[in-house]
Image 1: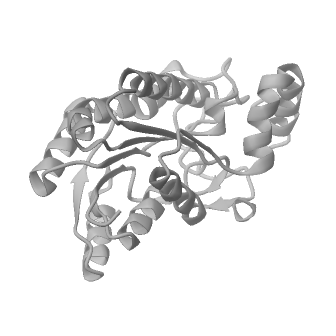
Image 2: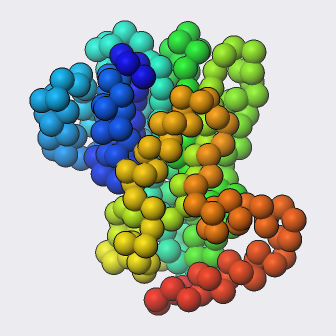
Amino acid sequence: MKNRVVIITGASSGIGLALAKAFAKEGANLSLAARSIDKLNKLVTELGEGGVEAIAVKTDVSNEEECENLIEQTKKRFGKIDILINNAGISMRAAFKDVDLNVLRKLMDVNFWGTVYCTKYALPSLLESKGSIVGISSIAGFIGLPGRTGYSASKFAMHGFLETVRVENLKKGLHVLIAAPGFTASNVRKSALTADGSHQGETPRKEDKMMSSEEVAKHVVKAIKRRKRTLILTFVEGKLTVFLSKIVPGLLDKLSYNHMAKEPDSPI
């Protein structure tokens, strides 16, 4: 990864922040994007003190023009793009019968369209470098999670989009990785949207029992090096869940329902 140019969206916290630090240790040059420019600038300063070349670009990935600007600023600074990591995302927690449809639109705008916009403008450079496109997805992109209609829909859409991009460029040396971390200790559940679009504020899960963002980042970097097509992390909530969805989908429906219904103040 030495001197590779890596774009990471949602780089100000959680998995994105951990990825930035992991790639910095590998000697990569970083273009870091998020809405919180203050956090990004602080991170760039911190990384710079360690000899890492990085830039911060304020970016709301639901805005096409800001995604285009992110790509242009990266090329202007580094002259190329080797890896695009579509990590920016938001979650939700509400039953479909109760949720405001604007919540679902917002999740699609960030999780799906953010990936589409960034990939669209970065693709010519990535084809030139025979680089990697990465989508940080979720187990919710493989099965429908109760209380997360908008989240699952956006991740399913991301999967379909990235898989098609992979096949279209099969003969051009482009690498596409879909990474599903499973439940990860981060701020994604605290900022998850409720039925009316407000932030949840408190996580319904035991964060200390989950895989850390740093551990996820380590696996993602390794998967990119190996140019893997799919990365599913954790056994029970990851690999086993995807396996069961293929052989006993009816049983998995019941298991998923019972599991999510046990959450504190479950919406189902």
